[in-house]
Every structure is written in structure tokens, then in C-alpha cells.
Image: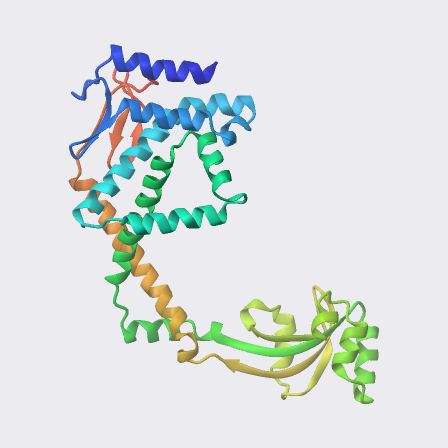
Length: 328
């Protein structure tokens, strides 16, 4: 019933009401001169209401969400048109070949192949043409986002400054261990090692670490920041090859073979640092773009659907006659 009521309200409103903003009755919003018809809003709302995911929700949640779906969908359509307008300005397109390649990828990812994909589209109320246009939009948006990556320039000084700031986190320790439940068991293992027993064989036979059977106690290299300080500190005075223990941590009692400390060099982590800084600059560039886009864009929303708030890029509830806000 609530599905029919919401769609009926949309249809009736398109005929009976005209927004106070000057937007015509059959237009939900105008974004920089581009109209979003009420019919398009209605179509996307219907897709949401008839989707399997929505149908699986408890009825009380469906009723609650139905009250906000119209606003949420229109908000998304406006945001999408703002982005698509900027993409058109940038001259970014998606070729038929790119869309076909992405379509074939979707088929390959869909269990059951093309037939299953078409059945899914029918279930959610999308035609193949509409699905392909959504893929084209995704490709255009990916290219647009990549254009911000291309504008990034990370200097050598920035990289080295970040490395020095994090130098302590690049210290690693290489160890193997045998984990026991009690101190007495750990001491007994140390005695066996002093008598010439093989460390890896003892680890596989006696360690309660679940991975010991597979790795024979070899932990490899770990950043010390990821290890229990109680495990690391006793190793500070050890020499590579020393057996250290018994050492107690929250996991139990350890017998540790210390293989050495190492600090990753600048070149070891350079690629990761560059990716991190470049990603941050790209995101900052995109945020600046969005702020500028919102400032220079003109968005008019049919007043019965709400009011556009450029600062948050969202739709606020419609104003009531008394000047407050209410629901359409």
C-alpha cells in the first residue's frame, strides 16, 4: 500500500502542483539548465521500491524508508547531473568499445552469464540500454577522477619529510617462536634447545600457536609497532641467533629465536609513500573542485520536493506555509 501511495503522490503532484521556485510541474529539478523530469524521478523511485533488497526489509523499515526514498533519489540525481555537467565541460566521453568491454566484464562476473545478467536487469527494472548508459557514466566518472591523479606532483622533499616523520614505524624485527601455556613448559623447551634439539621441529611438535604446524614457528619480519611490547623489549639486548625466554605476553609463554632488527630504508618504502601523498593530493584537488562546482552551479528544486542546500549538496524538507519545514 505504501508503495502505491508514494507513486500516486508523485503522479498527482505532477498534475496538480507547481513549485514556487518557478520550476514547472512536470520537472523535479533544474541543474545548470538541465531538467530532471518528474517521470525520471518516479522511475528511479519505483526501481528502489520494487528492488529485491527493499522487499527483504522488515515492513516497519520499508515504511520508514519509503518516506525518504523520494528525497534521497532526487538528491542523487541532482548530484549526478552536477558531476556529469562537469564531465561534459572537460570533454570526457566513454566510447562504444569501452562500454562493450565493461558490459562483457559484467557478464563474466555474473554467475550464470549473460542470461542471468539480463534476468537480473529485468528484476530491478532496467533495460539493457539503461544499464549500458550506467556503465558509460561509470567509465566517464572514473576517467574524470583519474584526471585529478594526473595533476598531482609529489616532491622529493615531501617524500623524505614523511619518511623521517615515520622512521620509527619502519623498524622491523625478525623472529621465530615457540608458544607454551606455562613458564615451566617454556623453560623445558629452552633446556632441549640447549641440548641441541632443532628449533623448528620443537615448534611444530610443542607450540600451541595454531600456525606452528605450517610455519614451524617462523614468524618472519614484522614492524615492531604491530607486536606486543613485552615480546619485543627482551630482544633489545640479544644478538642474532640468540634464544630468548621465557617471555610472557597476553598469549602465553614464548621461547624466541631472535634473528635481528632492521629499519626499512627510504627506497624500501618510497613507492608506498608516493602513492599515499599522491592520493591525498588527488582527494584534496577533488574536494576543491566539488566546493567550486557547488558555488558556481545553479540548482532549482520543485518546492514540493524540498529545497536545495548547496553547502551540503543535499535536499532539505519542503517549507510549510508557515515558514517551517514539513513533508511533501
